[in-house]
Length: 498
Ligand code: NAD
Image 1 (spheres, rainbow, N blue to C red):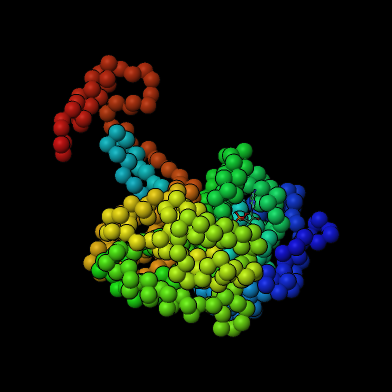
Image 2 (tube, protein in one colour):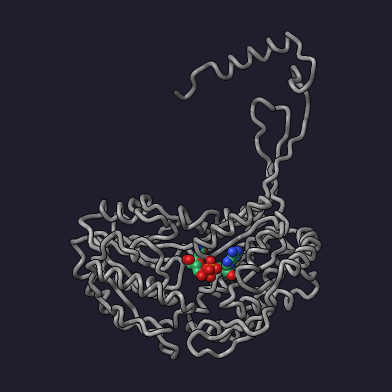
């Protein structure tokens, strides 16, 4: 991606070949204000359609995207250099999000009756989940289709309009996906889904545009800026940030399966995945066979642009320097390279690197690497593995391999999601919430919780009848006070369930 002479546009280029993929506008705060005005009108129309009609239209959108899936894979490859299989993978995950959100919004967000409670037993009560209004979605470059669809699926199914800012490194595929909504629904008003492109300034302007929520997916430093900018208007934020995902390999693990899964989980998308496996704690009892299998499988993984490549180039040049820093720091502090090493960095590609026995204070253990580097450290037992696994600031995903103790170990891993005897699967499952804790952010996409992120829970209470003293009126009569006093004694002064 290079900025052209004209400051109002930028050109997106393939990170490996430098070929141009397209030129996009740099949108300003004024452009965003105009889109927000259109979105406000469009949202009223969209919310008025109700769940069933919205579902029909969202499903039409899926079909329109599905019909363009070959073109999308080509475009994804052109703008990021990632193998078409990786683009296909994120596309499927994103489409499943739309399908799930459309199918379940009515169930999750429909108005429901609740018990009024003893103190106000003469009232009826309901909780409803109206949409927030207009939501801003800001997305990164590593899985640009998936991260855009993730935000859009739940926001739209809940009845919101959205303005999306894709990454400046990979806007082309997500723009195509968004435009497909109008191919499928030509009568939809302009502004229901709109996109703005540009750099940090455009993203920042979206945060201060007075929208009803910002769903941000990206790095921790930018997440902090987004939250600060949103504070100006008290705009709520959902932050899906970075990770340092960990895998524990217990004494009773199927070592071969664990090694194969860890290699895929660490090198999928060239390690440029928020839920990529960056750390492994293997128990001493199975260390040797595990390392042998990791070495064997990882040696077959290749970076390149050819059809057979396992993954493509580093999409952002600055990430290459970060990978070099982490690997150099680890080796300088006594780590051993089991696979590859500093020489594996041949920009824009980085071949697989597996480091073992890396001191816990190294940047490769504590900071997000976001490249094809897996750190494997040996621990005495699961207890030590858990202590070390939970010792970073992040808490996005995690996994555990164990024949008998999977559930118990999973429950003690501090992360938004854990997969037992496999890796990463919680991301591709729209029915379970996805998000992090700690520096990995807060708020959730996916599942019932993901839909509720884009609604404003509302309480409606209705007076049905009056029996006994009306506590909501003046004057308060002594006999009323006496009656309530007796009721308080009866209800609260007795020990119950203690
Ligand atoms: P980034 O934070 O640099 O950029 C993300 C988006 O924010 C881009 O569209 C960018 O233009 C925009 N932006 C930049 N400055 C901004 C500002 N001041 N205000 C508003 N918007 C601004 O992240 P990236 O490098 O594109 O993506 C990689 C990061 O994303 C990694 O840390 C990765 O772990 C994380 N990520 C997290 C998830 C998740 O679901 N938790 C998913 C994918 C990626």
